[in-house]
Amino acid sequence: MTYAIEAEGLVKRYGDKTALDGVGLRAETGSVLGVLGPNGAGKTTTVRVLATLAVPDAGHARVGGHDVTREPTRVRELIGLTGQYASVDEKLTGAQNLRLIGRLLGLSRADARARASELLARFGLEEAAARAAGGYSGGMRRRLDLAASLVGRPRVLFLDEPTTGLDPRARGELWDVVGELTADGVTVLLTTQYLEEADRLADDLLVIDQGRVAAAGTPAELKAMAGGHRLDVRPLRPDDVEKAEALLGVSACDGALTVPVHDLSEPPALLRALDDAGIVLAEHALRLPSLDDVFHTLTGDRR
Image (cartoon, rainbow, N blue to C red):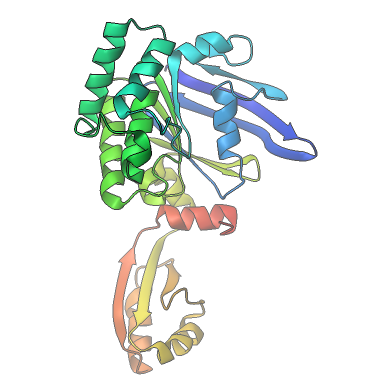
């Protein structure tokens, strides 16, 4: 099995704060590794170490077969990086931004122009190519930023919360691009706060909490850690929420209650009990655990 990203025992301290405390991970070539965790858990620090932007205090990591500490230049030749905020030059046009990066990467003037045109077309930015990036919408900026990270045709791409602030349509477009990249053999490490995004894109998941790995595995394996089925109910009348809480023994969140189900004979009995108590439901559903359940279970719901 070939791993494009490997890390073991990564430690990173900033003064008396330990941002990473023994983090290890692996990502197979051509796959998406999703990294989840609360704010401040160490996700961005992990990306910075793997992208050679920060030197670990202990542990080691390899990207594309090269050590990130001893061979940072070789690693940088293989990677692309899109951070949490678009980093394009607002005074330059979209085309100028991409051509500039191409030239900085050593492309000839003609090749830089051709690569910029190719990426502008791929990300639907052709009509905006001659406009200053400062006038782009948030979604357009994120697309331009992602295009910029692909100018050098990276084999490993780090996406640090790339869809933050995007509307559902723009987010879906970026998801499509990630799928195209992995189909071409690119390895993607994705940090995200959107659990739906991780479930949709990731082949494997890593949950980091307080600088440590809380769990790792496929989405299905992590969901299994959260237990069996769930029964979700939402009383029609707000006044019935407290009655439902007392009857089901769980607390409501935004008017909805979730009950862990250990035996599939339980849901009908619970629904009958609610009906006998005169509690009318606006909706109810029996479902398998979601990544939200996994996240809350592993991190104590500290988001």
